[in-house]
Amino acid sequence: MELRKVEQELENLSSVWKSLRRKRPRFKDDDDAGLLLPSTVAARGGTSSGDESLSAKMPSWKELQSKVKDDELFPAEEEEEIENDGTVTAGSPVINNNDSGTDATNDNGGNKVDADTAAAGYSEFGMCLAPSGNAEESSEGAKDTTSSASDGGGSIFARYAAKNTVAAKSKVKEEKKTEHPKQAMGDVDLEEDEPLSIEDATFKSVIADLESLQERLVTIGPKIEKFLTKLKERDPVTKKPRYGAKTMPRIKHVIRTYKAIEQGVAIVFHGTYTDPSLVSSLRSKMQQFNEELNAQIESRKSQQQLEENRVANEKLLAEERANQQRLLEEQRRRNEERELARLAEEARQRRVEEEKCLLEAERRADRELLELVPTVGVEGVREQIARMREALKDDRAALDTSLGSLYTLFEQIVRKPEEINFRRVRRDHPKFMEDIGRHVGGREVLIAAGFKLEKLDGVPSFFSKEPHIESDMDGWSNWFDMLKKTLEVIEDEMLK
Image (cartoon, one colour):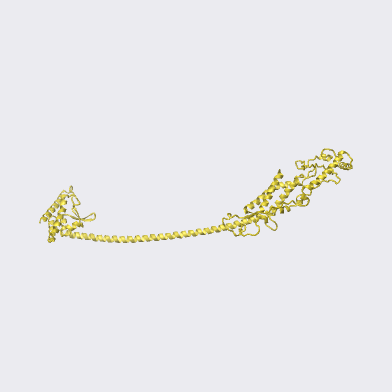
């Protein structure tokens, strides 16, 4: 069972060796992230010359087998001392050589023969071939028995022993001839290599396969040493090898295969006097590729960093320009606002000045108007109507209209003294100016009747202020009596 497992493992290892010779190490396109490395163009399938497979660095299976020498692996076998006349050396047992090719072995692999029986000269069937005695007597007896048997005389036991001895000698010679036919001719059993069909593989996978091959070979090394040790051993009784006629060729074939692979692994991992090792060469190429790859990656990173810096600088400059533009725009807007504020302030000041001027003019006009009414009361009303009549003596219609408007105004106030709208007259009202205000004495009549020059809601007006009737009953009575008397004076003037 152990031998069969070793044979299968070595057959697999030899297949791995042949498969590796067809490999062509290359770097995959996706291994270099799109980078083109000049030193690896050939390894990646670019411009290359010659055979790129491992067959140029790894010996063929036939070459490995040819380097295995049997005379260096297997010691010369010590043949039994079998005489040409068919006798057997004293103390040597007779071997059971049946045609089945199987050996009756003990636990150590040797032939199972009882030492006492062999010393006594018993046959394989337990029959005594010579009388008991010392070795020399037994030897002489055996020779005599053989001679007698050859002459046709002697006992039946002697004749059988001689026959069995001759058969044993013939069987041993036949085994040596059939054990390894080509080895007998001095040749080595060489297997022809299959034609190579190149297969692409990565450097990493090739190195991993070679290392796995080495590890598997080291694993079965102790078993091969065990086979070699037992191959050199011989049975202490029969002096025959411990392996039988069928097992011996298998053991030797296993050892030859192991030694062939061992030499190939040594060449691959340690090289020769003229060539460096294949594994170191592959690792060197991988290291060179990785260095160049890292260099280009760093170069690309540097370029990307430079590009990022450039973009960042441009962005920063754009932001600075935008900030400057924004500041300029804000400054322009502030300047415009200041200019508008200045203009507004100037306009306000002009307006204030104009208002002052207007107010002063109004005040001056009011003073002048008040100066035209030296007398306030009924007498003052009569004086102002007299001035109006004098001014309109040539325009009776205008006089009548003016007096009629004055009568209507005072009649409304007397009728409803609580109505403030009747007691307030806009100084710039068009109807008032047309009927009363444009004539001499028209405005003065109102002032003489007790109207005041005031601004109501910002509008210059003639306003007759009503005293509080509850708190100032006398004042209110005087104010109302003045209005009624003024109405009577106007009515009298209208009748003239």
